[in-house]
Length: 134
Image 1 (cartoon, one colour):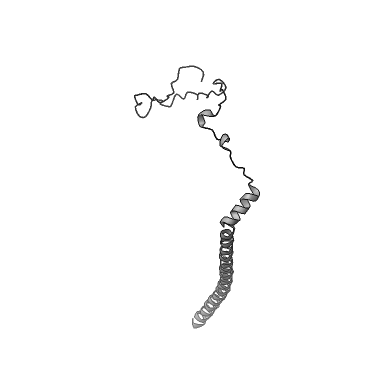
Image 2 (cartoon, rainbow, N blue to C red):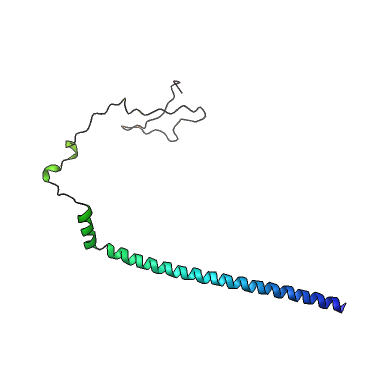
């Protein structure tokens, strides 16, 4: 009986030792992975810091002015080029050309307005089905 208990204990100790050995290597691998991730994070933070500094340097007013004058050749506006909105000619619009299609009637939908219509000079447009083409 003692021999069986001793053998079972040795097998159990060997299995636990092997499990701890494997766990130790897995933890070492995860620590290496964590170290490389932390290093990548610090490198990315440094890169972001450098890019922010470059962005700030490139957004100086004198640099923006020189780039604007180089790539955006703007001309001065003469006083005769300015007009009011009333002086702008608008093209004639043919109402038949820009008609809005009427949606098909849905018999399951209630078309009564949810709120009562306001009274006065302004009225809301409402849809009423006349029994025509659907």
